[in-house]
Image 1 (cartoon, rainbow, N blue to C red):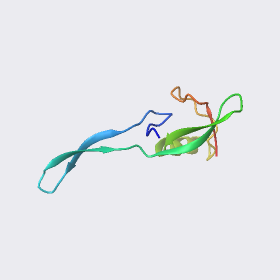
Image 2 (cartoon, helix red, strand yellow):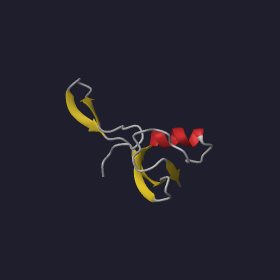
Image 3 (tube, rainbow, N blue to C red):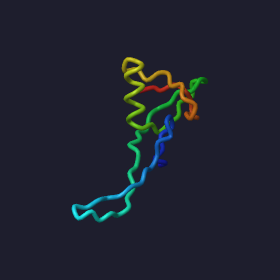
Length: 82
């Protein structure tokens, strides 16, 4: 599974673990993506991976109904169904 959001493009980020002694070691953080059903304009259902921030943002905008997503990076369709 690709850990990249279909809407905003958020993916893996990298940085450092920092110990109490200030030793730095490299590490990565994965985006918290969830699998959701997407219904495109023709009515075909597919799956998309969407980060929880985008799910929360669009749930608030659409009164807890994830219906219309108007971002361009979403390739599978522009409508979410629960």
